[in-house]
Length: 174
Length: 100
Image (cartoon, rainbow over all chains, first blue to last red; front, top):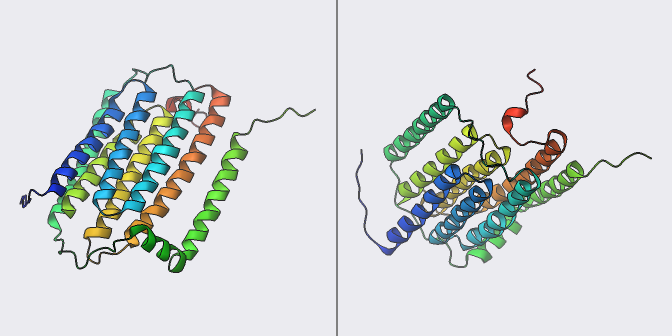
């Protein structure tokens, strides 16, 4: 079942380096004490994932990942941390039973996924992806996927208005 | 090569899942949900290149997923800030008014 047919190309080394960075960032994000360090370590994971997207010939997705996740989501989380109590470290009131059960559950989930990946037979890719990635994505977004594109813009508008309406301070009635 | 990408996505997903289940700070729960969504995006883009019919569909799907994830993070943080204003804590154990 565990057949290791790895050819040591440059892509493999780049993939190995980036995946080590991503996993280390994610594990440190779970294990740091201060909340701000957790958010920054997760930003490091997002950047390594952007590197992986470039390795997968998805340059536009990689740049959107850096813009959205590292730029917007991480800053949003840091704003949220700063506006709520950030001096407290993660409270040491650990429940060992809950953490052990959650770790066992996650290991079982990973075992199931790993078995499913190993048991599947993946055919060799048929054709190459087009070279000008951004141009092709733009063409597809405006021709075949125009309706989901418009729906996503409506969704973003609604979410933006909703977030502002939620977080607005209630004004005192005169 | 596809199996390596899928395994990495599975590892990141399980790490995010552990964070969602275990962490008490609600912002860290939101952050772990973002990590899980990132693992899904990695899956989609890997299948876009190495799958059965390599096309750009996976990448476009991942763009939409990223957008929805960002919108959900914004609304989640807004809800959390309103909760913090009324209860002065973000510890998930303290939000138990429906239980008492």
